[in-house]
Amino acid sequence: MYKRLFSLIFSAALLAGCAHAPVPSTAPSTAPTDPGTQPSDPSAVSTVPTVQTDPTVPTEPESPSILDFLSIATLPVGRTMYVWGGGWNEADTGAGPEATTLGVSPRWEAFAQAQTSDYDYMDHRYQIHDGLDCSGYVGWAVYNVMEKENGRPGYVTSSTKLAGFLADRGLGRLLSGDTQEPFLPGDIVSMPGHCYIVVGSCADGSVLLLHASPPAVMFSGTTLPDGSESQASRLAEQIMSTQYPDHYSRFPHCARPHSYLTDVTVMRWQVLADPQGLRQMDAQQVCALLFSDLGP
Image (cartoon, rainbow, N blue to C red; front, side, top):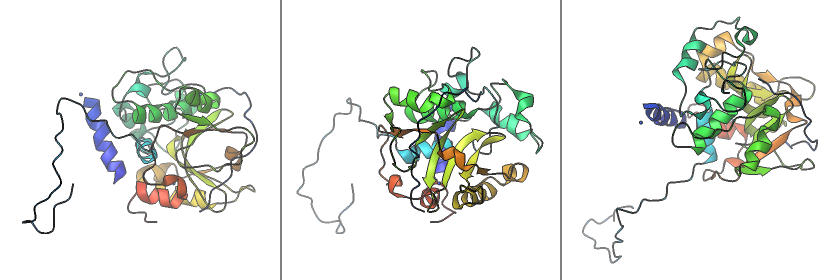
């Protein structure tokens, strides 16, 4: 439901994821980037005076929420390929035009629809207008939840440094290296050469996430430490196969290694509200909000 709602909202704007898994205590290393109700008796008379509002004074808009952010982040899934450099500008110094535009680029969709199961991102390096890389994707998602118009300063930088970059922009706090706090829905995680968005954690310690990773923008789940299937990897396959069947038929691999949860830095939102209480939910409960047909 939320997915459809935000898809409509952002299409219009183009025209005018079980107990929590702990965050490891290791610090990040330096690495190159991965390019009102009515009374029941209608005759009843209310004794409460009517408050008159001044129509010339704009009302304060509702703050965006973590659910808004995750709903927005699902929009390119199944519609956007991983392209090294996608979302960056021509000079490779920050956000490009697609990452500072509201909604999913029609060019991303057209390029994704033309790809087959043998897609190799190495054949399309720096076709920056055709898709997104990991930091381009996260930066695009942040822009789309924080901004209301196109062309403002963007949120794209090196994947390894992105969590710190966003914290420095005042969007949230950077978790310290010695913390044992859990991964929570909406967290933005940087690791050497990659970055992703946490959807939620599972009871076995695995994490469901959203990211741009070869071959495409997709849901993935981390495996168990021994590399075996986890609750999150099974949940990712369920989501991709039921919600994005065409994409899944071509690109069915959803698991990512347990190393995604080590040697990381985490930006935890402070400017996004959480009225639905996502931070108290596991990955399955969060997904039930994102996709009504999945159920709790």
